[in-house]
Length: 183
Image 1 (cartoon, rainbow, N blue to C red):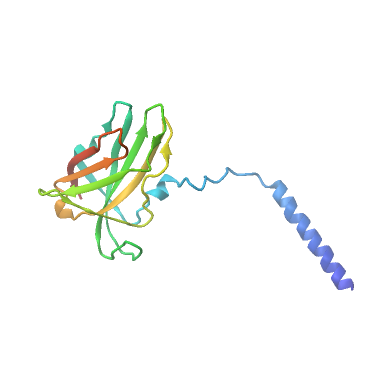
Image 2 (cartoon, one colour):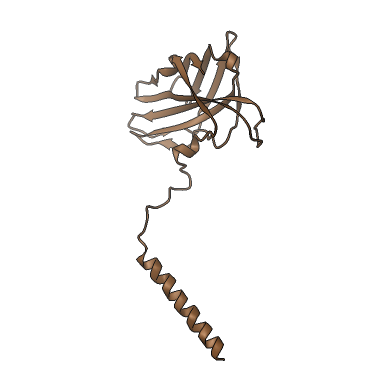
């Protein structure tokens, strides 16, 4: 019986010491809410290389209510992974968009639609998935911004003439961006 008593005392002491450590530990910042994903993760595109853009792709669209839509970056990647919606070896063009809400009301981004066209004939680029790219969702509070990235099967030979259309609600006209991409 003595070994059992010794084991019981040892377990009781171990339990005390771990709770003492919890009391001494300094609380850290709370984790982000489950519906919020850090912007870097929402736009993660491993292996993607930045390309430059010119013309109207660089010019933000600002509406009368001070809502602004901008193309904040363009990247290029050759897909090496296989996953849902991904094609190994496919060349993808990734557009990162940023909404800035300068209005006095929350901006609903649950209906954002992005269309990419390229070339002289304005062929529609097929949307595709890549890595951890996420669409816009939720709302943007007044004075805040939110970014998301969209991947398209847009061949580099179409880079000389690119058009990107971004619609997000029935109150605002579609934001149109036209220009060229330079690898």
